[in-house]
Amino acid sequence: MQPTLFLIPTPLGSPDTPCLLPHEQKLLAGLTDFVVEGEKTARACLRHFGLNAPLQELNLRTLNKHTEPAELPDLLQPLHQGRSMGLLSEAGCPAVADPGAALVALAHRAGFAVWPLVGPSSLMLALMASGANGQQFAFRGYLPADSAGRVGYLKTIEQDSQHRNESQIFIETPYRNNALLADAVTTLQADTLLCAASNLTLPEQRIISMTAGEWRKQPQLPDLHKQPTVFVVYAARQMPAPARKRR
Image 1 (spheres, rainbow, N blue to C red):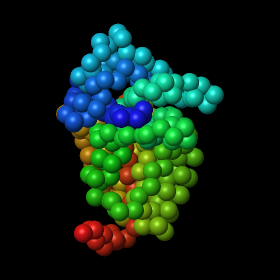
Image 2: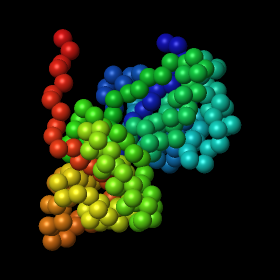
Image 3: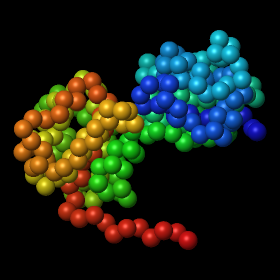
């Protein structure tokens, strides 16, 4: 196999949770080089991957939000030396809402193969469970941290959903989840769908999807403080017709 950058999903919760398919583990067994967001989390995951090399012999390079663009080429050194390598995020799929995207782009430009593996994606899981439009959707990333900016952006997201018939997916730093939920419930139109999907794939998983009007009727809002949560907004008046399956 030519030198390949494997994109390796990691568990959304405990690193002890299996998330790779058996044939994927075979693909990774001979790897010794990895680019990771955090070494501690990565080592906890890697020990469950069935790698041939002992953990202490693995070469881990860090790529996070503090990594400078000029440092990226050096991270691909194993590929240039003829060795395949892996890219891991802290949780879920690497390169999606994750600094690894820049490394994937660089690997493509250098002519290396890129191989994404199957694994948990909180964004797709939330959309699947929301009841919103799964044929047309957009990921908006993080919303503004201040309430005024957040409210204004929620209105923009809602308008975009109405005009484009798109589900709008977004996330927040977990300690601001409660503030975001409160602003969304009070800002969105009564018939706009709002889904909050927390702790996905974990035993304490909770997914609540109802209109903003129904949210406002609840005695109290759920406590989402420091609970990883994906939000979905859908303001279109009707779902699109199911797409025809290709034969």
